[in-house]
Amino acid sequence: MGRLVKDSGTAMAKSEWDRVKVRLKDEVGDAAYRSWLRPITLHDMSEDAVKLALPTRFMRDWVNTHYAERIRTLWGAENPAIRNVEIVVEAARAVSVAQNAAKASVAKVVPSPAAAPVRAAAAPCAPAAAPNADNDELGAPLDNRFTFKNFVVGKPNEFAWAAARRVAEADQVSFNPLFLYGGVGLGKTHLMHAIAHHIRERNPERSVLYLSAEKFMYRFIRALRGQDTMSFKEQFRSVDVLMIDDVQFIAGKDATQEEFFHTFNALVDQGRQIVISADKSPSDLEGIEERLRSRMACGLVADIHATTYELRLGILHSKAEQMGVLVPQKVMEFLAHKIISNVRELEGALNRVVAHSQLVGRAITLETTQEVLHDLLRASDRRITIEEIQKKVAEHFTIKLAEMSSARRSRQVARPRQIAMYLAKQLTSRSLPEIGRKFGGRDHTTVMHAVKKVEELKECDQNFAEDVELLRRMLQG
Image (cartoon, rainbow, N blue to C red; front, side, top):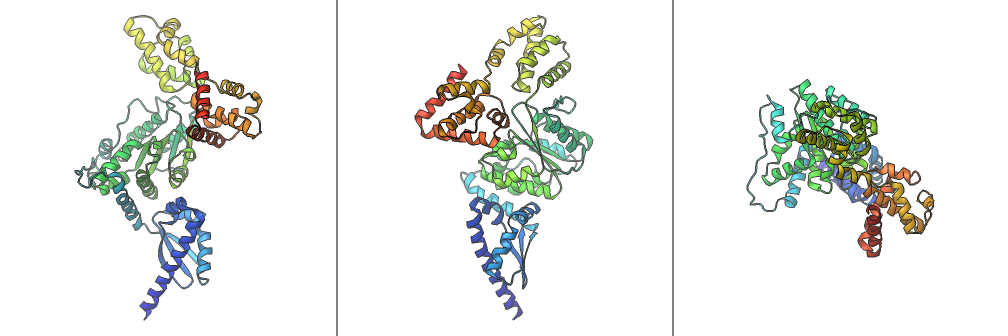
């Protein structure tokens, strides 16, 4: 009889929970419901309390912070006897949730069930004696040039450098993950390689896996096709440090994001370190699920700004020293002034100058440098400024230049301002916050909205698209 009463109570609780979930879904929307509330299961119940379960601590903490009070209210409306709703972690579910996500993704990714099995690079029970040898095969090779010793520190990158050093030198840090972001060629990959090198030298027993987000996706797809997802999970969830470069690559790739999210949770729950890089901050990454962006932002986010003249000069001196060549100071200063886009282009320019000197047998002078780099310098000289864009757009739409920074929101002013922001994003290397400051101290989200709005209008309005293209050509000409 007691068993019948308990079964009846459980059935009633499940029915109540089903109704609560329906109301929650209506309130929060499909995306938030799928990410945070759908994984919840009914774990246990008593006369005045119910216990709900989630597979990871992170999900439990998020739901407790954002939804727990609403769940209690809705459940109380269904059953006034329930005074307490507790949310716990049911660790055993973490693997099964990830397995189900992988199975659900097979239909999307696998073209044919008859595809030949392809096994992952390393067996799940590979010996642990040389963990990094296996990880080198699974991940990407490290560049020996990219070490902390060879990284030139300046004001634009000192915070990211300090955070990277802390991760490399401590077995555990208070922030996890470390998220590095910045433009192309500013040193994100260099710092990631430096972290991996330093950890391996300091403690060879710690397994470090470095790879690009693109390679992570291809490994995952291969595991799905070979029906070998358990090996994949074992490989990626057993490392001490996981480093994923260019995470923006998985934007819009739902199955890969799902697997990465569960891998992320599993590693953090085990106290393992994660390091991620991207070209934008987590909040600005488009095409990435909100729950994954929240997860990536919950550690330490460190940005690398565009280089300053002093930093570029320091990089050139360091590079010349590594190459063992003597370059006149005037040439160094000239290059630091002229090549401002990114570090790769700067180092490439120095390589060309030195190679020309060695192959042709001519001394490195200011004149020969200008001859060798004539194409690069011409492009650099024609670098478009935000002020130039504002002036050209204002003239085209016959509005005052001051309107670009004014608070006016009428369409005849707001639309040209949005076009100018869009062109600034397309034709300059300035960051979104920098562009916003040039337009009357506006927030970077305003610039993002302007770019998105202009792109939408270009798609549906041919005359508008031609106007924007004309302005682009006028500026680039």
